[in-house]
Image (cartoon, rainbow, N blue to C red; front, side):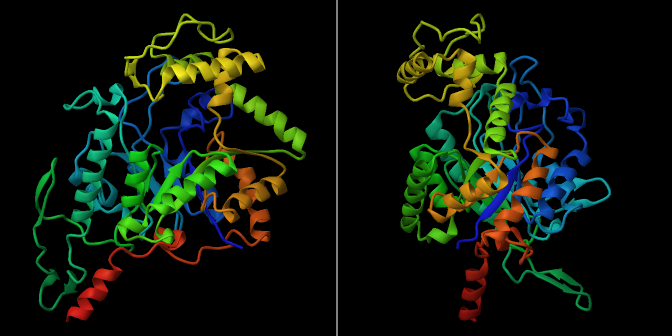
Length: 459
């Protein structure tokens, strides 16, 4: 029986931008530390590996249904670090509009009044991670001197060089540099200057922090294009994917693991963690009814139209969300719609597929969007959901999951109370933490261990 990994995603008030409209969402507390601490403390009580904290440099416009701000994810992680002991902290840090030194410092160090320069990875005892994402919307670009957005291939090229430069900074301290010798008056040996150059960056300086207890933060990446998969195989410690069905998960798992050998990596060095939601009920029928109700609440009229515009590439605000799909064809040469980059590779083919599906099932725009935007969802009794999750891991469709409660901070409670015991009973999930760092939880090697051994051999 393979033990698997479980993380949670806390995206503001819930899995969907419209989740804040629920009466029990605690949306009023979104910008308070206690809101985040409550949910993460629940996850740690259950032995969950890490909490994933999305971030954005700009709110996403779109009317009262989806517009909202978000606290800085690294700041949330630092706040939670002081209130937890074992759970990993995985803030998102976009790379398109930021510089390597800033990112290296943001994940490893933060400036807080009263704390001076404090390191998230040091402060948490080696529990920090970094979700490497690229920015693909003009809303974010408007907040930066660079402006606009980068096309897909250039975003990944920049991301790869940012990660490479950031790791050079993290690895710049020799493993024996931190020496506290009060008699000799030496705190640390001389730190060599970091010199790093690639096509975008030219760095010459000294990084202010020694390696953390886990060497450097765990890197998580999400991307399903060929460029994204290659970037993940070359650089990531874990990949966050949206593949839903068992068969699709197995194909993705085999593809990514099969790319590792060319980078001198083994399958154990990269974890595949699909996102998944869950809905529980005392019976299968109750769970299905509850799942349908939740999805309809999540996709309101404006949200449905905003998703449709990503394929059609034009303003569709005059269309009735509860009416039929547009009879006009998608724009072929438009790359951005109302500030958002279009992601459909062949918009007209997608539109044709959606029309066929809507006609066959007699679906309105809103009903169709509910169907096509649903994430992998485990629905059923606690026993059934535990069995479904376990099946994916045992069948090499994933190494675990990043659970996305439909509502936070309280949406995780019933999973912890009712599903985690079932998984523990099956022997596929831990009953307690056995390590102290996030790399321990994920079964990943210390990135400096080989450096230490090489240094010992050389001496």
